[in-house]
Length: 319
Image 1: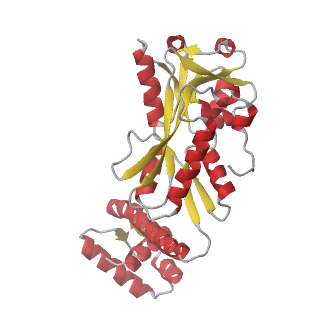
Image 2: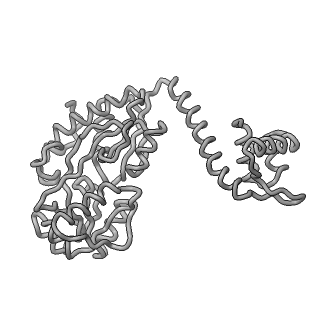
Image 3: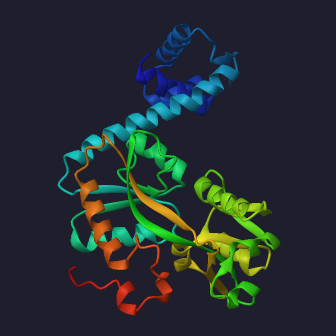
């Protein structure tokens, strides 16, 4: 099987017309037809239904199209990675969970202060997708809990993030210094999409069960911090999230830590153990400096909005 055959097939599947597909590929129609026939013979299945005036994908062709596109995309990325490797501008591809969580953005800010020559490309994806992108080389570094990471993904714990609840300002929890876990039994809890935050969802479920009840879940889910804040403001539910979520809070919402027991969400830097990028160590060093300055690994440290201003400042002075 040749890459050009995959490319010809994808083009034909998009055009569903041999003449138009051949014109796009700058070959004669007979050559295109021959390559598609060779591909079908090699696979042992018919990919297309042909008639004098019509071309359609068979079920086998539709399934093959999905994989063929992915292969061609991977080949394109491989070529771009090779070209990037010989450029003079160092590049880091970093995963972030959601713009509403501030851990990775703060780390990248710290990195950029000390290494302004590094070009950073941020990719927003849930933790499971970050694992996949680390594995296939689309990401150099990611962030999330390391408990479910594949064996080939290395990790470095960087933050123990207090877990709490996001509520409207006039909610009964808003006047509490801390919200006992048992008090959540009477609330509808909002979860993120399972494909985005499975570890956080599991942490909340296990926490509630440890207090003797199964959580009552809001029927919908959310994929972004903005959507979560909207539902909270509408008094439809409360949202269990780490303290780092609050940087994107909409006015009218309040975050309070859960207590009895106090619980922390473990953020780790993640990278593939065979990734040759020299910038991974640089990111880890920047994250460790930030973690020490902000007491990220101290479970007894207060949440960021309860610390002195000097402790949470993003000063541009060297550290």
